[in-house]
Amino acid sequence: MTPIAYADFHARSLAERDSFWAEQARRIDWQTPPQQICDVSRPPFARWFVGGTTNLCHNAVDRHAAARPDERALLWVSTEVGQQRVYSFGQLQGEVEAFAAMLVEQDVGAGDRVLIYMPMIPEAAFAMLACARIGAIHSVVFGGFASSSLASRIDDASPKLVVSADAGSRAGKVLPYKPLLDEAIALSTHKPSAVLMVDRGLAPFQRVPGRDLDYAELRRRHDGARVPCAWLESNTPSYTLYTSGTTGKPKGVQRDVGGYAVALATSMDWIFGGKPGETFFSTSDIGWVVGHSYIVYGPLIHGMATLMYEGTPVNPDASVLWSLVEKYRVTVMFSAPTAVRVLKKHDAALLKQHDLSSLRALFLAGEPLDEPTARWIAEGLSVPVIDNYWQTETGWPLLTVAHHIPGVQAVPTRLGSPGVPMYGYDVQLLDEQTGAVLTAPDQKGVLAIAHPLPPGALQTVWGDDARFANTYWHSVPGREVYSTFDWATRDADGYTFILGRTDDVINVAGHRLGTREIEECISGHAAIAEVAVVGVADALKGQVAIAFAVLRDPALASPALEGAVMKHVDAQLGAVARPARVLFVTVLPKTRSGKLLRRALQAVAEGRDPGDLTTLDDPGALAQVKTLLQK
Ligand code: PRX
Image (cartoon, rainbow, N blue to C red; front, side, top):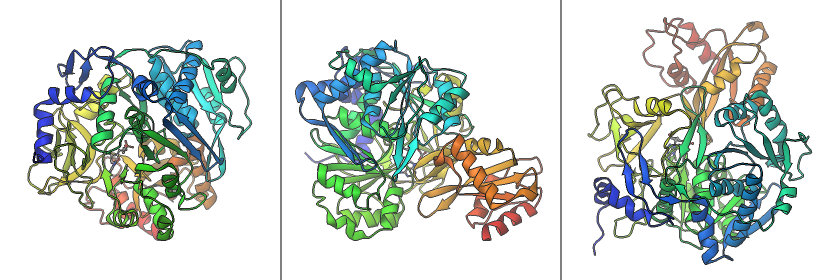
């Protein structure tokens, strides 16, 4: 049979939505089959596989443990502490059941929240899977966030229990977690009743009597425990994951059970081309969406081993990732453009030192993939390098080139573009002012998705349906469509090119950060009267944050104060949010009505033309910025 064109296949996924996804739903085990494939009766909400009962942990662990208990499931390597561990599916199930028993003993049950603030260690994955097993909702907070970021997430999620560890480690430097957690709990209004601590022996810490529990002790006590999977209606929340937006308050992206499992299973096969029994390696972190979808759930649901890595791409040297590919016979790898740009600064011969013959493809996501980086790594690896665009909200790729759909022609990659809309996504490009659908090639518009979002995408914002509807669905005039908040163009062949965010979100080394959160934090420093933070293009990290601050007393401007403001951000939000520079100015560029001209500030910082400045109140403001940047 001649394969059909991808565009026809994509059209079918939308036109025959329910039969399309009913077929995909067979990829996972259901205890009760779905009664209805998609309930669209209450836009902008959508409910997938209504009435079906299933469990993420059963699909990721138990069903494989039953069929092939001795096959590898979770591989863990830490170049930070020089350790590695291998868990088979059978062993993984044992760990997850023991963890689940600890949660149950602490009275954590279905619907309760568990906040996970952990470095990249196997116990973090056990914790996530144990929550999924019993129907508790996990909320993983990236270990790079500090006390006030953590406190706001604790208050929003109101977890019954927190799982944490003494410390993480980065580039050989021990980063204690416990003091930040204790400070966060002191700051938060909601107080979790228990904190389960994994002690790695990296950083001594104080235990809070009656609250802090010792993982090692509990693990011994619950060895061999059996805790059955809770069969959950497909639309039961499985987890929340906080992400930044326009306001300073992070949004808890909430996901379901059944839709997520089906979407991940399908993507592992059709997009990533992974095969059960092989090894998948994503260099992300469990604190980000890529870690949820493609370190923990996706590979395991698909019956693949997943390689979890604690370390940087350049420690002990810039060939460490390739040595892992060789050692564990990785077939599919997932990373971010920044990691590749970091490697590119080192000797290309490092790539050739290892036997990479197992590797079939490298997927890159999270930020724009520039052409030189894409070319360099594709030539070095001699395997396809595949850009893919998506968001915390969508949970799996929205634009890429799916190469593994049986009977469907593969779409060739095109440098500079992540690709074409994936099956299930009704992607539209809209005029920002009028909401009109842009159909002619090369027009710039807002990238949007028509209702309903496919399985696996967010259900709502945790605890705030109104915010979900208003933020995401009502931002384009006259239309109820999901906005990605990204600018894009589309060429005559349907390839989409991402041009950057329409809101105040910036992307630093693939990490999504809200400039408003950073501004709120810096304004909290005693010396600062006012501040604007913008994202500025950076050759290595894609973007970096630059803060322009007005001091209460301009005479105090000094490099020492710049350092102090950065330390303040480190302590409050975490080093991940630290601006690359804090520049002291006497006035910020504003319109006569007082609106901050961030875009003009960004343009000047990037050496571009700031455009129309007729509304600027004080023309000296931008001149001052220019002079400072030239220094
Ligand atoms: O601006 C887009 C950018 O990252 C945002 C989503 O970030 P996050 O929620 O952290 O999810 C990352 C999941 C991979 C998007 O709105 N972005 C993501 N992937 C790409 C990208 N920009 C350009 N090209 C990409 N491939």
